[in-house]
Image (cartoon, rainbow, N blue to C red; front, top):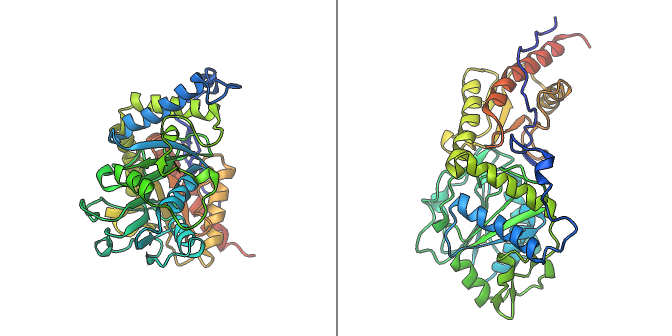
Length: 384
C-alpha cells in the first residue's frame, strides 16, 4: 500500500553540509559588480578582499589585534597551513571525534611525524576535555561536521596556557559563539555556514600565534603556498588582502553578499538563533519519533549546524543500505538533496541546519523523512 505524500514541500531542498545552501535572497545578478578580469592586486581587488576580511571581523567579533587572512584550498588548506607552520616547537595533543579531526591526526602523526598524544572518541561522543593539557599545542575541531558533535564551550582551555590552540571551526563559525580569547588559530571556509563558493579558506591568528610564527622555524620544508613568514617576520600582506595565490573575485563578491545578508539578519546573534531554531525543529521531531535518534548522545554537545541522525528499528538489517534508500527517495522527490551520512560516518542522515536554511524548510522536510522511512519499511515487507 502506497504511503500518502506529505502536504507541503520545502521551498529549498538544499540541505547539504558543504557546500551549503546559499543565502535565502541569493540571485546571481547581485554579483554583477564583481571586478572580473582585474588583478586581485589592483586597488579594486585589494579593497574587496580587505572588505571581506574586515566584514568577517565585524560579524564574528574577532579582536582587533587578531590577524585574519584569506588562504587557498578552503578550510583544509587553512588547517594544514597552521599545522605545517606552527607545530613542532612543543609537545602536541590531537583531539578527534569524527573524520576531519582524524585527518588532522594523520597529518601530524604520519606526515609531520610528531610524537603527539592522540585523544579520540567514537562517532556521537566527545573526548574528556578536562584531561586535555593546554600547556601543549592542541589541535581540534570545534564542530564535528560528520558526527554532529561540538565542543560545548572553551572553559577547558586555560587562559594562561603555554601552548597554542589550533581550532578547525569550519562548520561552527557564523553559527556558534567562539571564545576568541581561548583560540590561537581558527580556520573555516566560505562554503559552510554562509553558503559561499568553494576553494577559499580563512585563518585567524591570535597575537600568541603570530609570536610563535616569528620566533620558531619548523624543521621541515614549507611549500610556497603555505608560507606565512619571510625573514622571520609575518607576511602582513596576507592579512590585508594580498592573498598568497590568485583568488576568485566572483567568489569574493559572493562572500561579501553573504556578509551583507548576515548583517541585515542580526549579525552573529541572528545567525546563531536561526541555526538553533533549525536544529530545535529536528530535535522535537526526533523526540516524538521512536525509530530515529540523534547520533550525538549528549544534548550539551549536539551541533546546531550538522545534525546527524541514525535509524533505530529492529526491522532494519542493512543499516547502510536502508539509509541510502531513504536519502535516494527524498532526492528523487526533490525534497532533500545530499542528506546521506558522510562516507566514513555511521549510516544515517545528515541535515544541514546553518543560518542560510529557513526553519520552514526544515519543518516541511520532516514529514517527508517519515514518509520515506515508512515507504522503505513497507518495501522490506514485500516478497523478493
